[in-house]
Amino acid sequence: MPELEHTTSTDARPPKGETSVEELTRAQTQHARRVAESRATVPDLSATITVDMEAAAELLASLTPSEGGAPSLGFEDLVVKAAALALREAPRANGAYRDGRFERYTRVNVGIVTTTADGAATPVLFDADTRSVLELAAARVRLAGRARDGSLTHPEQNGGTFTLTSLAEFGVRHVASLLHQPQAAALAMGAVESRAVVREGAVVARRVVELTLSCDHRILHAADAGRLLRRLRELLEQPTLLTR
Image (cartoon, rainbow, N blue to C red; front, side):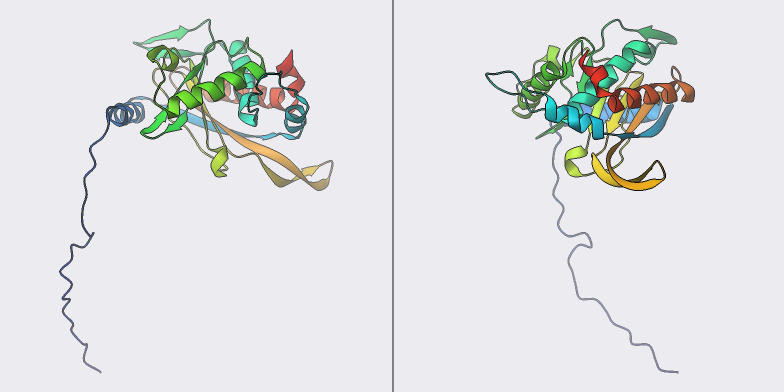
């Protein structure tokens, strides 16, 4: 049996290499605290639904922005509008669990998670259920720009009753969002992509998206999540309902 060769490492470098330390900004510290509290204190439930977006794509193509500066319309704007209308029909989802009680809000204000240099900000689209898709798109683009240059005001980031996170631009298919306390629910949107699906017994290519609803299980149950997601799918697959 051959003898094993014993070698001694002469590499004196630290096993992980040189270590650098980066102090958190105020925004990063607040974000770290909020997400840790959310994960530690909220009994969350998540559910996912797949939505056919072919009709939604046709609607986007047909919408003619007004003169004098066209907003950048996208699938996200349709999802915001659909979520706002669905929340109006499910008031407990547009609410919160706070201090052992349920709160329900009369305004539907959708926060949009936006990437910034410090991580993320969440500007709010107020009264999203009563605003047109074009109005929502224009507001989203304007607020996203303010979030990235750090000029968002305190009122523009507060008062949200529901939150949307989208990783569509990165091609991510599925994502689940942490809840923004004390909100009862949050929606996460993946990329709209072509997939092979079965329609009337035939395999065809259709544009679809996965939407994942995260809920505070103290206020919303699995059936509540299912009904809300079903309504979202109905609205997005019949998108003319979003323009009335």
